[in-house]
Length: 180
Image 1: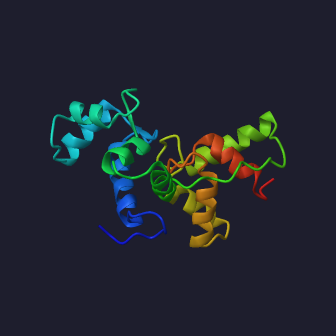
Image 2 (image 1 turned 120 degrees about the vertical axis):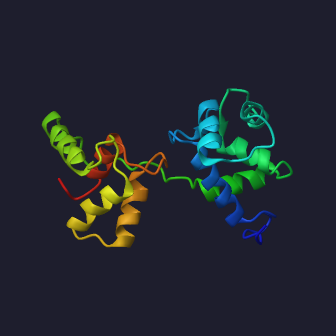
């Protein structure tokens, strides 16, 4: 394990971020939790070796018994001796809190929403219904953004931290930009 980064936390940020990357590999649909099917698919497709049957493993990690594993439950299983405060800090390393949503400057009318939808569809080059980082980067580079500004734009627009920009997030991004 790496060295602790934050005073009062005996766990490494690097290790927690590696654990979060593993969690995200399992969370195939990017909804923030791992289902039985996602666990099975990840184990089968990525050739992970679990100490037991994937269903038993999921049940072991599923602290609230809702049939899915959240990252908080993943942390609890992997760091059983961590205090709740330490787990909160580790969780915040992986999933930083987004600032409260700013009120928008304007509310688009129906025709403006149609224009925004057309823009969204234009930039959604792989037609999967969301904008991935590269699609946003292409759009932003065409309007003069540099790499750092693109990262900041993407991270601010990704309100639910799922690493893609959905249509509602895109609308909010447009509403807060100088595009109008």
